[in-house]
Structures are given as structure tokens and as C-alpha cells.
Length: 344
Image (cartoon, rainbow, N blue to C red; front, side, top):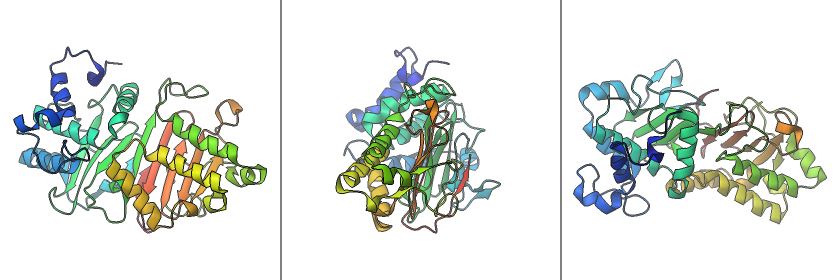
């Protein structure tokens, strides 16, 4: 694979631009790209939503025709802004690194992307992108729906092992602006037992630690024979009913650890999205109404460390597929009637 530009030694002149975006707080006053309004959660960097508006305003009519869509635009994938898949391009004709975008627009797109993640996760996300897609920009594309700057817009970036959104709370009742996807094939397409180098495997280790806290009867409730298809993340259970053990029936120490599992799942994302996840979950009854299922199928190495598992509530699905490498599908709302389009 080519070296990831974000991890290079600075020989590429574009790196200085990207370094500028990542440290924009120190130089914002000197840049016409980054406004000193709409500050992000660190009170220095602009919020991604502010930059989506700035990006949109910078696009030429021709560019808008190619990457901007009506709020309710649909195609053969359904409502496009609500589609999610493990490996897809929302606009494959114009990758981020292509000449379709100006250098300043690329900077803004990159700043939007990194602004959606917790700062201490940036290096891990860079590793995932390098392992899976030759780094940032080369194999990702974007689309903008609606009118940025109003109460109805959404920015979506997709690629291999990636669907991420920025919506400024435009999508009612939904966390992340809609379903998201993340994954990682760190060592090979078929990862070895233990998923060496996988930046997301620690989430499964957290969940498995909770499984080990369960007694025999609880394990029998939590352990399910066959995992559902990974893209079945609509609300109401993969087969019309939830699977696994309900959190409300756990002991106090087990419930406390279940909160730690949830913490590990939301940790990679910015604080605003973490808060939206918890708000949606609490509105729909909280973690107590969720079920945790571990699947016997796909147990790499037959070691009883469950690679495939799922945390699910009335309008909450976090489906973790660890075989043959990590795929994670996320669909969260405060209303189970929200519809998505998912394809694996």
C-alpha cells in the first residue's frame, strides 16, 4: 500500500496544509478558510457543522450539481442520506483526493472528518484508514444533502469500513444523523485469533469481560447459536424479536460494567455525538431495556472469546461482527419507527 499522507515524514507539501487543519486553533485568525464562529467542543476549532456550511458555500455550481442532493433524494439504494454499507461510495465519481476539489475544499473536508472523532482517537483512525484504504482521502467520497446553514442538512462520508455523518441535529430522533459503519482489517482479510493490531477489538474485549461476569444461567440466556446477517440492524430484533439477556436483570456490578461497555463503544466519537447516543438511549428506556447477545457462530479459534455480539434496545442497535475481521453497524434513535437502508 502507498504510505498514508497523514503519517508521512512531511515530504509531501500537502502535509503542511493538513497539519494546519489539525492545529487550526493556533492560526485561525490568519486563515480565511476557518471562521472564528461556530466553535467546536474544544472552544477553539470550528464545529464540523460550521465547516460544512463553509464548504458548501465554496462549491461552484458544477460541483454542487455533482455532490449536493435534495434532502429526500432517493435512488436504487433507497433514501440515500440514510443508506449504510460496509464498503461503498456515496459519490464514487469524485474521491476526496481527486482534482474535483480545490486544496482549500480538501482541507475543509478533512477538518470536518477529524472533527467528528475524539482527538485521542485520531491516530487509531489514521491506522485504520491506512490499513484498509491506502490512508485518508484516496478511497473516500462525500455528499451533502439539504441546505447547510438551515435546520435541514447532512454531510456524509463513505468508503471501505466507513460511513460517518455530520447533520447539526437536522435528523429528528436519530443519533449520528443516521446509521453509521466502522470496521478494520488490521492484519489480513481473515484476521488471526485475537485480532492483532485491530484498533476496535478492545470493544469486543470489554463485552467479553462482561460475559465472564455472568453466571451459568445468565450465560445460557446471553449465548445465541447463530448470528444474524450483519446488516440486519433495523429495530425490533434481527428476526423480529430481540436476542440475548436483558440488562435490567443483571446484578448491580454487572450493570455497572455494562455501562463501561457502552462507554467503550461511543469513545471514538466527539462529545456531541456521544451525548446524542445517550440522549436517544435514555429516551427509549435506557440501557436497562437493552439486551446483550453473544453468538457461537464465527468464534475464531473456538476459544470462547466471542467475536460476534450485539447490544440492542427498542431503538438501539450496535452490532459487532468480528469474523473474519471487524465490521460494526450502528443504528440509534429515540423512536423505533425510524427507517434506514442497510446493505452488507
